[in-house]
Length: 160
Length: 115
Image 1 (cartoon, helix red, strand yellow):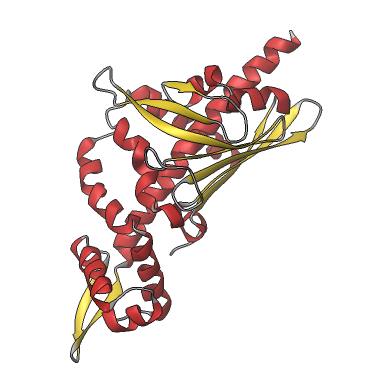
Image 2 (cartoon, one colour; image 1 turned 90 degrees about the vertical axis):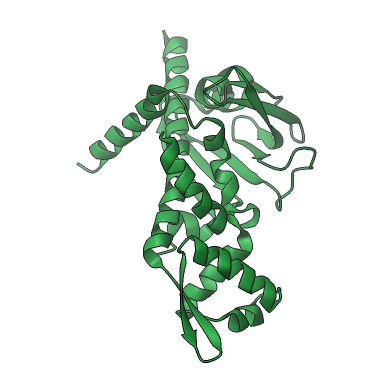
């Protein structure tokens, strides 16, 4: 019953990208690209120990909710990791936050194997995992479902 | 996303979200059940604290209670636990979506550079 994700208190994924590790690193670590795939806005310097902020919309009002994050490792183009969802004003540590890690492994001529993990659910508790959901429980349907559809189709294709 | 679903699941989430309650669920699962006493023997908290956590788990249907002598025997409701587990899978799915977006953006940049 308690297998995979829940047993280890982490989420782990791998995805192949037809782009060089340099390009992928830029996409995952710079504010202008972060905005395209995750929060509404981001203020961040990809330097170890640097603290940044990402903002989420609640989908109903123009208000943006800031969430702090702290860069742990920034080793272009190999690894980028950060801690987030710690309480406001706290210093990020293994006990009070989730750790997100992106490992980039060169694959083929101009490809990258991206290994993603988010750990700390056991230590931090699962409640925080829905933090973002609570900020965007009225999110625009297409924004939410289209990417899922892509994932779904990719999964379908991979099982054939 | 429907808010109704979120509202129902919020309680389940906070019940299962606490690390101590998670450890209690693990213990109940591995021993096929337990009482406040047996659980507190295996955890760094008092029997009273365990009883409080068990009450929370009971309220959201994550455990079943049956009287056992002077004690109450708690067992995990696996169907309800599966629902909670499915919620964490949903968190994984939101990361899947983000990773797909990262892939699309990076590949578009790469194509632009090769042109």
